[in-house]
Image (tube, rainbow, N blue to C red; front, side, top):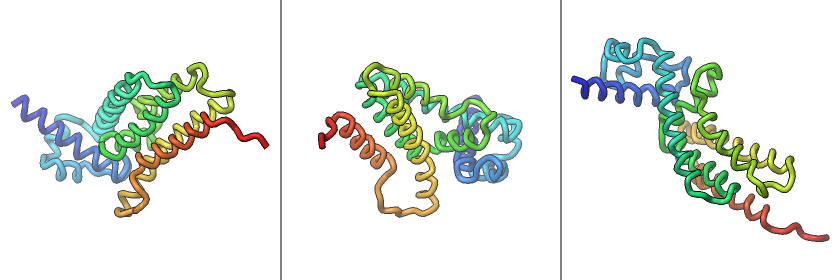
Length: 196
């Protein structure tokens, strides 16, 4: 009995993640979620009394998955800026591949009052790495690198949604493009400026 309840809960969470990812909180429907999960409204409300609690559970699961990725990437002991680049690529890959993470990101963006906030799963690790000695030559450069990291990840989320609406976009996976951008930045930061 317990296994069946746990299985139903997982099915509902997965269906809810797909629904929230596609339609956002306001556009999501509990009836579509139950149909997609192959369960009844009664079974859904047994686990999640209302849409708000269901969305909170999806956010929490996406947050935990993201935190696990952050721990894995930061455990590699890479140089600080390389770690920020690796984290940006890993987060973009996670957004591409995990519907629950995408749903958590979207739900966080749509409702800043809910918890946990998806960005809080990874942004502190970026800030910590960027405060490391020798990462940036100036505070303005450090702020620019922080902005770049945030914009690449959040822009990739937007790009992934755009691609879902227009499949077959030929310009490569977002994670590949983020990796390429970071390679250009890292190369540019290590190349001495040309003297005129």
